[in-house]
Length: 210
Image (cartoon, rainbow, N blue to C red; front, side):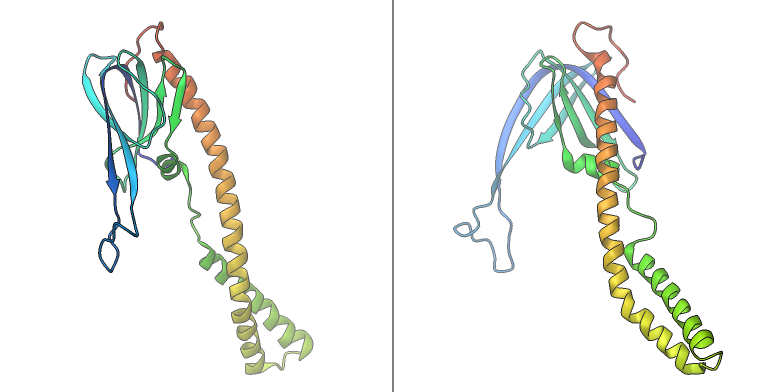
């Protein structure tokens, strides 16, 4: 996986704090509350007594999952090399059998960027087209007497095809990346559903963390 660490913790909720705040984005012309009212950001802080007896707090933004005191929860978080602080992936309410998925964190954790981007791929394809065009022009059309003109025409043809290849490669990467992410997302959620089941109320306690 792209992340260095996957963190899975579980425990009983001992306190729930719900807060909300208005977020206003400043523009180049300054803050204009009348034109840009901003949006309400809802936060939920859970104080959890984990299965090993420690008490920890966890913060969540814009979660729609209902949680109350005495219920048992499981929190799945990820940590990346470039983002040292862990971020939320899934919050499970094991007592009610519900969950909330934090799509932004999950995408950052699971998405894969191709090693060679569309610009590099387009350059390789354009170079290949130039070589083929030069070969045809120089050895087939002009019987090896194309000279500098064949090179110039091949480079010009490759240059003209570069934007087309760039668009095709960018479109292909976007489609395939989304397909791979959706498949990885399904597998990850199914894996976490099974993994946190051992923490459900009525089951034998397991060591929290991973």
